[in-house]
Image (cartoon, rainbow, N blue to C red; front, side, top):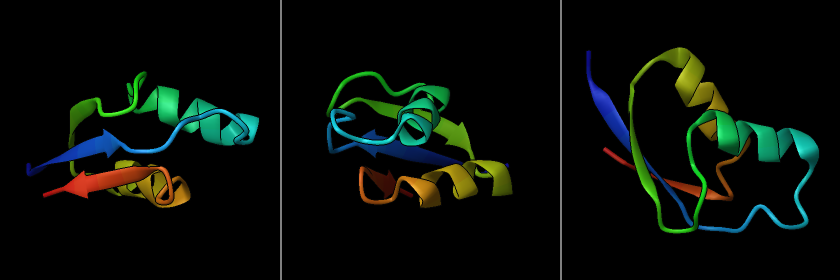
Length: 58
């Protein structure tokens, strides 16, 4: 299956608890960190919920 790279571009400070947990569930900890995940509907949904905080590199 295809992979996507997800980069954290904005801080978790001041965000809702749900958004913070979503960022952590994707494995992101620091600004600028990039993780590689399988391109599944579940991962896409998580990225969509925090799209203002992350960047997707295809």
